[in-house]
Length: 413
Image 1: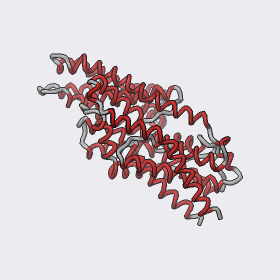
Image 2: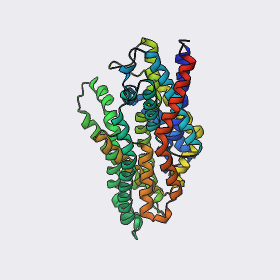
Image 3: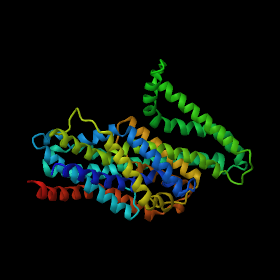
Image 4: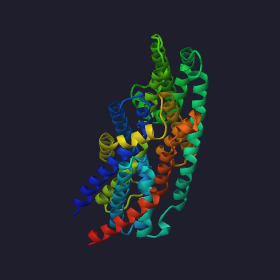
């Protein structure tokens, strides 16, 4: 029975990661596929490599926070097996809801699904005092704020590019002049999300060669080199006459999608891994995870593998909804939507606010659509997506309560 309580959660965690890959990860590539910047197969390769790398290398922090946040584990200190069953129920509830949403092609937040399941189970297992209701309220507020902020930023970016480059009589010349600025904007915004994390291990590696550099200097150097390389690469393409600059902008969008995929993998893998990491800790120590809790590397690898598998098998539905179901995207519009998504996440991270990649991307796409013209937006699709956002926490909480109750009946003895 002891082994059963470790093998089954691993299978359930892979199932949740599978659905996370099929739904939430698809958000990071939806605009790139919809704008034809990359093909679906190329998106699978890009997202698969970078999501897995982000999850396996930098997913530990978020996983630890989710495992010991929302519901305080100390309430389960006298009954760690109850917390074990609760985390198993979280894996089932969040996985099932993401599976349902993916089947209908609706992008939902895996963070909200996991948080909703944990909160519902904590409420039924211990009581309302075990749930951090402020965290639930804050997450609910971000539903409204995130798409609005992202949409506004995307609209500003796209208005600038449309007015200064796309609608200009000599668009290729204008684009050539704007290349350094676009490169700098891309590398600075996405670099602030990814590079500080990358600079720490790089700094440790340089330390072995007696080279001491502050982490921010490493980040600046990498960002500057990246911007220079992207600028020169784009200038080389301009040597050949082009009928449209959209394929040239596609290069910027592919790079932006790579950064979003890496950052997303490093943050959202915790939604699938936090519960199984907590279960593994309880199985190993017989106590609940508290301050000394660390997420094992094998759980991060398990989550990364599940994410890649789910994206490959089921990701096309959500990618189609994001990339084609809201508006018809060109690379310029997709680039602006992704740039707005990264900016929104960065601002929220600065103030410690929990945000959703799917909410930010949908808001960004709608913002681009508003600049193109209201008639270009499929509001029926937007309403359907908003409805699934609204019901994610209560449905995942309800599924969690039902599953936890069944598990208690099956495994209580």
